[in-house]
Image (cartoon, rainbow, N blue to C red):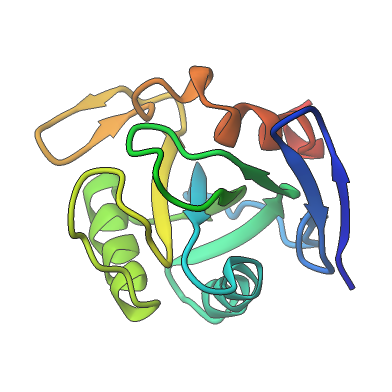
Length: 165
């Protein structure tokens, strides 16, 4: 069952059985707390997000703590494309930031992601929004994610997360 309502003139809130949810699992000792942003606008993104949760829950690399609701919002950058669906997933992991980046790129490929051009339509995009309180600035990885605090696709879902209040 999906519940949907307008947040404002351009953003919509979508709730499903897995978005939002706080899982009974807790971050494990020795693991790092990470916020992942997920997005997509090709195919049935909401269904794909739910498949992603099932996939991650079977992973030995990540433990899901909480998910935000899904937000449907307009694209930015390349704007001649459909609206995006976005959500935040709070996880714990033993992976280093660069190991986690490689792992999520593999997940994106598994879920059909093609990187044709910057801000292109996509089946699934997974970004590391925050990795604990670390600051990372390498060619391949920037954490916290660049301009996360200016993006409705991140800020709005974060407002609904219980574990971050």
